[in-house]
Length: 385
Ligand SMILES: Cc1ncc(COP(=O)(O)O)c(C=O)c1O
Image 1 (cartoon, rainbow, N blue to C red):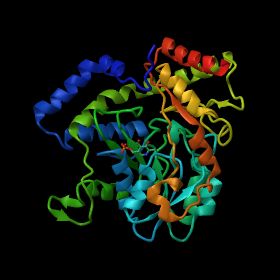
Image 2 (cartoon, rainbow, N blue to C red; image 1 turned 90 degrees about the vertical axis):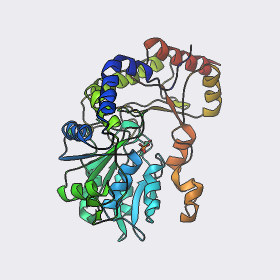
Image 3 (cartoon, rainbow, N blue to C red; image 1 turned 180 degrees about the horizontal axis):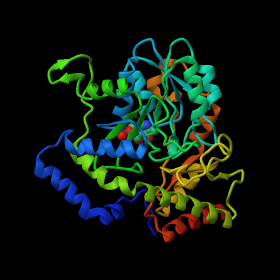
């Protein structure tokens, strides 16, 4: 059997006629950039994410960049980010000439720890970027409290967490000053290329981000601020409008797969030994009582386990055609491009350990029981040996 890490073909096949028609409609209209499809998507996103304003942009990376530009972050400023995330979270800070300040993570949720955020805020801090990694929320309430006390805006990197609700029921991305999303094809809501979204409840910031999406020009060729080309294509917006009504169903299917993995792993005697740690909702520290009890408290963009013997296991999985990936093998503080920031390689032990142990397994909504069972079988075999 062959189990890919992600297979998007069944999703396409199920919606093929609607998706093809939506793309064809844009092609017939020959209206490719921004326009009515984008406005429609933005309204749908405002409703879905329960926010006042949504702006479609060119990617999740550009969503973060646009948010920081609109907040006027630049040289001399510090921005607090977890050291364990996708590169864009820290890359955008450096691209603006500001300094990313890295923090260790909570080993159970892989997200920033509010007490470390509080310690890291200085006079130079101009933003805090909590990342809701793998689809699980960072502990936003204490982070927002710290941010309010120090008058620092929070930019949520919700690229992997569209639809997740915080313990008070709010959708992630709508809690901080700005929320940033990615519609990269492998995300829970993925499009036919690159696209992203920024959301906010702040009307001034909305207006600023909206004009900065098109080079800071309120009227074409008249520029009040310097922006960029952060526009979303109409084709991507049309695809996303077809897919959005299915997102919660897909997230539930991912969660059901996570539950099945856990059941199977327990049956196989493989759960939570010193050699393997499988994710429970919120295991092992951090948010258990606080998190929202509903279906969407964790949308599983990835199902990430931790294993102490990862290299051997990866080899074994490869030989048996079980798709897997390591998100992320090198934390930011050890990336070559950030070496001038002077972090020690052993400075953030929890992120270091995660980087050595994490392993993502197939979790996509159309993963069949047979395929999921096969993954567990291969694990059982490996640990029996
Ligand atoms: C946590 C995180 N932030 C930002 C991004 C950037 O999104 P994009 O790939 O759409 O630019 C991603 C995408 O992988 C991500 O996972």
